[in-house]
Every structure is written in C-alpha cells, then in structure tokens.
Image (tube, rainbow, N blue to C red):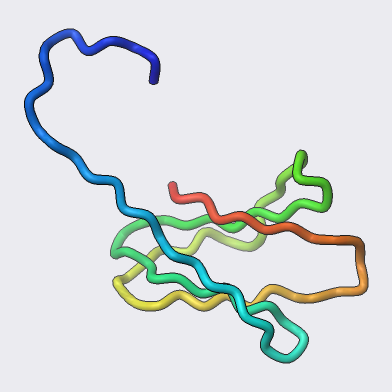
Length: 85
C-alpha cells in the first residue's frame, strides 16, 4: 500500500490467480472459474468501462467450479469483471 514496513519482514506469501473461461451457450455467455472455499466473488457490469455496477449478488466459493450465465442482449456492448473480496 505504499508504506514501508516498520521491521524487516522474514517470511513468504503467495498470490494465486483464478483462471476464468467464457463460452457461448445458447443466448448466454457462460462465465466459469474455480471458486476457492470461503472466497467472495462479485461480478460487475459496465457499458463504458468507466462506470461499474454490481451484477447480481456476491458468490461464495466452495472449492468447486462456479458457472454464471451472462445474458447476451441486443443492447450496446456490455463488459463484465470479477472482483475478489
């Protein structure tokens, strides 16, 4: 966060990323990823990549595949992002 540590840090940490796949299924885009247990995922949507609104309720992972159908509409382009809380 841009602040120096008050002491020397000895230890380790890891950053794991979630691989998300998107496929067309009928009239929906199917968003899929592995939901880590206890991790909260929030989907956001935007039409302009500037203003983002929550899309549905947060999803809690439980160490299984998460599948979320996203509607494909005749509206202008729609963008989606996943935020881990």
